Image (cartoon, rainbow, N blue to C red; front, side, top):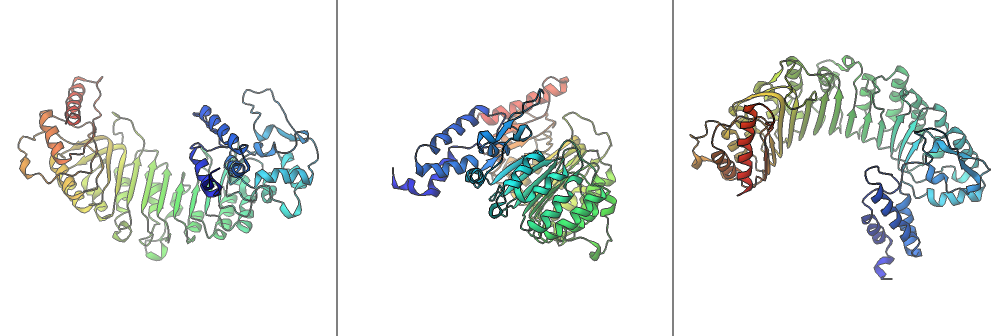
Length: 522
């Protein structure tokens, strides 16, 4: 064997490159490839002693069930209880049962594999299984997963958390809690108390359950008591955010990312307008908020003081907002001190589909967008939703001048009126050298008077241009020539006109398709 293969770190890198799919985590859309890669690493594990350890480490590193580890106990000690049910899974923890006494030698054999696990998903492990493991665990190695760093725990029985010491090793840095069977989060209150005293080095914390919209007083109190002890938290994802928990999170000095899926009693987020009443998140750089209505988002943003170094904001609402709510949203970014940090702004004002109408009559205008011109370091601006948009050349030119670092610009709404034409694109070409992607309405009309000699030097960064349902009345040859002069690297251009719609849709779509083909044939 070549001496290079005696270097364990090098062997591990080679083995990992052979397995792009995470072994131990079963995938549904790549079952055949998953099995092939699993077999490859199994073969390596039995090839020679030099390969055995790194191959076993790779096989056991990530596990989506505790069942695989439980099966390393002698077969005489356990059995799988078969049930007559269509959704029964014989490879789940729920089907497993101990039927013998675990000896210390048995525990040592299982630890040979367990110490390799760094990521584990726990899925409602039966209490009798946890009880048997706890009784068998020796005093000097009471933790079954001593080196686990990430745990995803699905549970609906609060008694299971009495075994937290068995399952959560001292190296734990990230935990994802998911209530089972639609239960409320309150089942996790005992575990939160345990984490606050035994795992204060956590850096990532998630509490999530799809569809849950209520955080009761008991859980709010448990979170408010637990989180202050976790001073090293950097990322928090929480299904339901309440005002007391928000205030607790603002005291975490290392918190860099906060993801929220529902805001409960958003009026409680409101604080006094003076600086002393505004919450400051000293390290928060990324904020993701999903909410029912835009006023909920505005209430949260109202608490982000100017000293919060927010760089990335992603927001999404379920309901279409009113004009006044959209106004409040953009004015919440008007503080120049906080805007200077902002590099990414992505806001979806209710989900919509192409051709959907603006039901609320709300329209985003240049006056509403004006506060964003203070975000001089903005790189990605994406605004979309089931409302309207009105753009002008004057504003787009001002935006190009104010935001020279733009890489992505997407303005996609249910309805729009536009005065934007080649003048705006010329401004982006002149002032935004890094701009790579544009999606916005563009009027390809009245272009015959454009002085082609006055166009700015070519901008070589733009590769994609999506003009949505933009009007076009000029010759496709002229439009393609102007676009090619401004953006010689333009590779992809499209519109949203339907080829099976009304006659006007078909005509417009055909003309833009011709522009696209002319650009491709250069």
